[in-house]
Length: 310
Image (cartoon, rainbow, N blue to C red; front, side, top):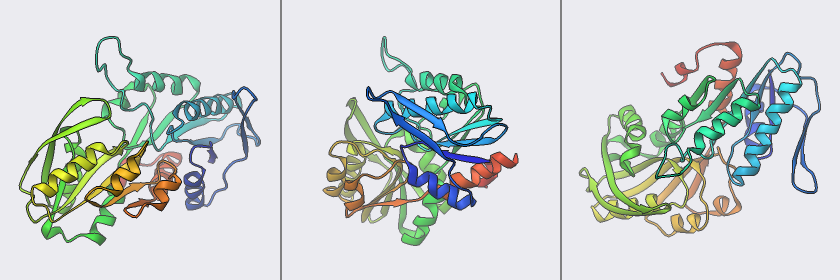
């Protein structure tokens, strides 16, 4: 078993390797003067079970290309099995035709990864479960819920806790955590007028005097999350916290969260934190390295991955 790290999130790859007690394999991933990606694997991988760790976060196109070229290098180096470990699957929000003459980019990227040489994909909290079906190779979709529940247990008393989905699409995700605590579930109904802009309509559920916890998979512009927090406070919530697996936090998102009623936004390290995120007073990170590492071990040993969530 070998672990190879591309450049998008080396600290996470190194944490995974440390958990497994393995070194990160030697590889050179660099750019030519015209910014073409060049990859050279600096050790023998023939017959090996290789895991390539690469989030396809910002800059998404560069990181996708790094992953594809690395997969091709390993395939041509005669690796026995290549698993693409993609903690954050970029282009995952483009999972269907949103209008006439628009792409399904999540499927396109799935095709590229498969053709490049991946035999298997390991990812965390896909934006839409059906993306697993876009691949013609096995896909293991881990959930951030086990990581979040441990932190929620430390911070909250289940008696006055209310789990909240910030939109209709995230109800399944929020319900998983609500079920673990036997908590009530509320939903913030919103209408999105255009991409990147959301308008909160009303709260479904009684949240008065409850400590509300918003659960989401991706926080990008943070508009939905912050608007939901305002709606919950207006409805009489005692406090609002939020948990999101992937902290994309683009543009002015960090400042927006800082100025919002959100007591604390907890994200994972699936995406490398920017300086602004690290300095934020109300954004914290939890590591998913143990979760990913344990899944990788089980894949390598051909044992059950789904039992991680029992």
